[in-house]
Length: 308
Image (cartoon, rainbow, N blue to C red; front, side):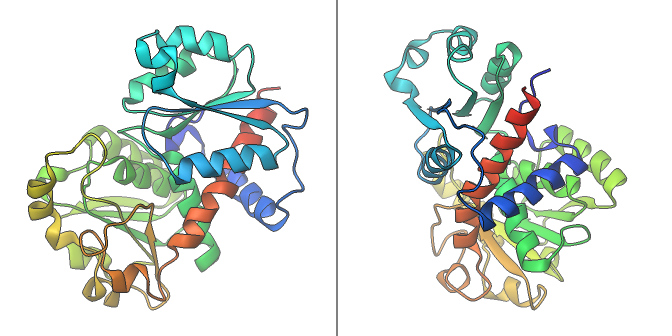
């Protein structure tokens, strides 16, 4: 059966570790893996603007020996209302895999339901699993391990990043803390699913409104923009509610001395994170951005191996 990667818990703990181990090997030997030699083509679809996702998938596919087919959905029939399933049936006869950056999670799920090749969630409104794979690779490089580490996310707990940190962090055996105000809490179904995973891996998940307390002894501090694509017009109310959750020097000071700061970018200095923190010695955001390349290459190779 074709394997897809639509949300973080599509990988078991052992499988997640396999992908991260492969990502580290690919980072150390950047041009030594060519599973797409031929070249085979991978379609990368975009319903939303992108910098890091577009660059990392296009470069990564080429480095794996393949040909990236980058499609802006608005320039295709998909953007004019062609059914997702019809597009999938055209693509899966001609490409080795499909990555899609879109809005609703239901869209990637519909594509995966009919596609005979792996479908990868390159971001939806609900999850951002490729980003969290890169974040886990970054945190593991800094600390030498993931299991037992405290990962604190500050900001909108209902966001795709918060949801993926819960699932991906729990899968890695981490203690995931979401610090968010009451009106921006994680989806209970996602939180419950992450708790069930953590019960097996030895991790934990929790939600609090006390931002500074959530940072105590954290090995990883993460945040994201307060207003994402599709939320335009909500800036004022979001800034007002989320201001106490800014990742600043005071919160960094109560984390572990060797803590690392993550932000999936783009960042708004002075809003969700201060310039002193993102540009300071604890920041690993540029390693994190680079690791999108290595983590996604490993994920593609891993999925393709299982599609044979």
